[in-house]
Image 1 (cartoon, rainbow, N blue to C red):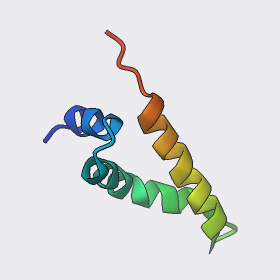
Image 2: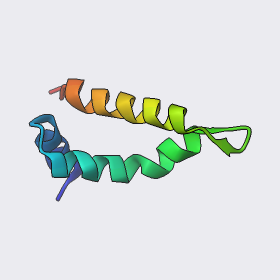
Image 3: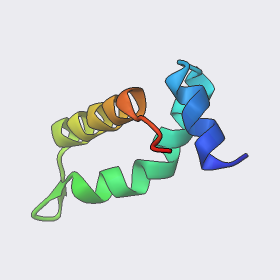
Image 4: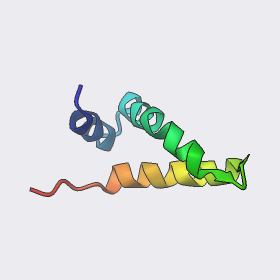
Length: 62
């Protein structure tokens, strides 16, 4: 399944599609949640919330 289709399903509140996108981006979220080499759980949660907002508000340009 293409990313665009997964994103469309996620925007329609398909929980499985949302989980799939979060899993795709998990390594990037973890990488950016490291502060001085230490994992910051609160930062990870904030980054995950921002990803969810991006999914919700994404608009395709045509």
